Image 1: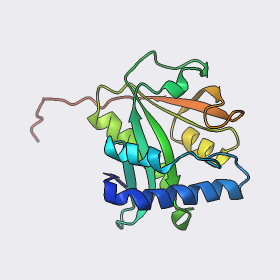
Image 2: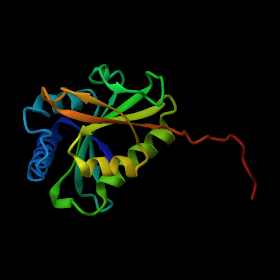
Image 3: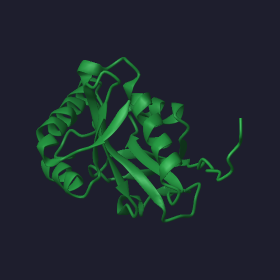
Image 4: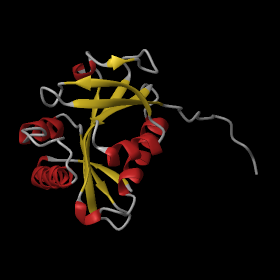
Length: 184
């Protein structure tokens, strides 16, 4: 799995992946993303600010999309719960979807593992990763828990007036880099 920062010429592909994600949620009876969110404007903003990424399989097929948004995320201002870290140095995973044509191959798990690896290895200033998902989106909850995130609270009314979302956080353990050369 490889993450590639999206460019404006990727806009339509990202829109299509997110629309497919919306359809997958609707088929499962999950009321997440069934309104205006995520909108074309969200995706354009993410691309313009360097937040949008495409997930590519090892055989170079684009299988999904996500946004990695730096703090602060004011959607979490009214979270009911407690963070694992008291930090402003976090990143949030938003608008993540694996296209249904690529479902069932473990790409969602690989995507989360790649994000965790990238931040752990190359972004020492980031203390944690945060994410939320609809209370009925059990598939996403499974992937989130499987990749080591902890449930820390809930949000009400962020994506719709009565929507409940579960909030998760993963504390990042940075890989120590050594300056010592070991002869061998």
